Image (cartoon, rainbow, N blue to C red; front, side, top):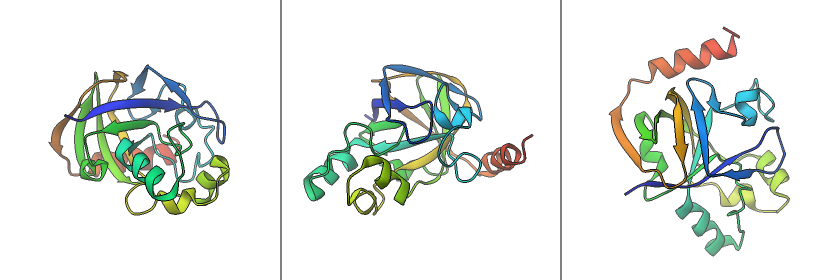
Length: 171
């Protein structure tokens, strides 16, 4: 069974991530109050994701292999899952709580995540499919820590691409 272990948000780019027990996902926008929904993220307007997922198992592997503890949210991802390979959610729709999401692309690590984490080796540790994925909010709704992740099936990806283009063009 795949579940949500932790939810993180922050209102502005580079600010520490904060845990919440529940949050509203807003269709084609992101998580209510999160930096990328508000347009205040480090990559806002350039390379943003509505929502990001990372596996708790990846965070644990990083701790074991590199002795880097990212369990405090320094990985900069919104939703920490347990019991699912997030890479398998690419081009798939899935439900968490009341919201429906679609996996759109991998979210590889960058120099910024290492800078904000203030620890050498974070970007390297997040490589090899440990960096998580970007997802789009297909249907809004509330989600909570402990909610199950329910797969809904494959998508063609065209609706998400169109939504991203429209958003970048300010429509």
